[in-house]
Image (cartoon, rainbow, N blue to C red; front, side, top):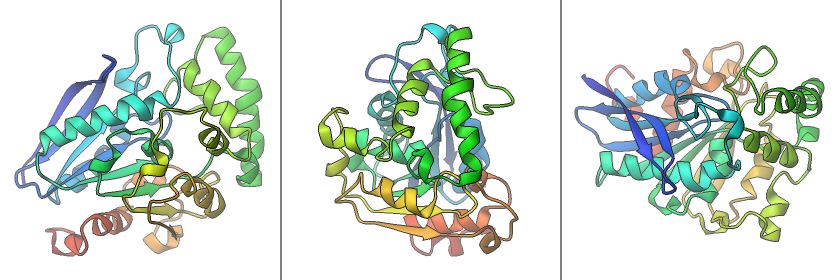
Length: 294
């Protein structure tokens, strides 16, 4: 089966150019938007995206502003806030996918913050179903205890030092994601130091405009016990942000997929095809069993 892969640029409503990649099969029957976790470039999801495309999905991956191919030359002077990814970037990516796959049902895979921010999207109603993967609140006190020293050092040591020296969070041994803009780090830190994460700010109106309570599309959230961040508890708390969307959590262990580790990012690595089949069948029941080479 021939799969067309095209890099393109998507312009957001405020004019920011987002780097994106479209995976286009010859005979498409559905479309999938993949929204990344914080600091993960779109290329990280390429294997998963191609696997979906081989099963007749038009797939779009993209880099949020300030990240990967959407990073400006001078990241230190970039002005933005973390929720801009949900208010501006995710909606623009969805519109680009709709244009590339007219009249097809649209599904969404949100990894980590990609699930957090679906409620900021004004066009969320165009999505039929959401698959959340490793999506849980960032409140450090509810994470695995072994992970706490690392994240507290990130918030109070590493991060402030990088902002002082570089004006942004620089990738390296401590932070293995992409470079992060100041506006991402500062808001992310504020939320992660509170038990409520951002849910209290949603309730108070501090995060307007937002559409979390309007979402009705079903959500299925995959949680892995060896993920130190998205635990069954933090996953359940995050879903409270979507009070009227039907939702459920599936807890899956690495052994369920024949792997030794999944963690926070392993769901999209080679060897996780059994999980990918579960996601595809959540979108379109039974389709993975009928797909060639499934």
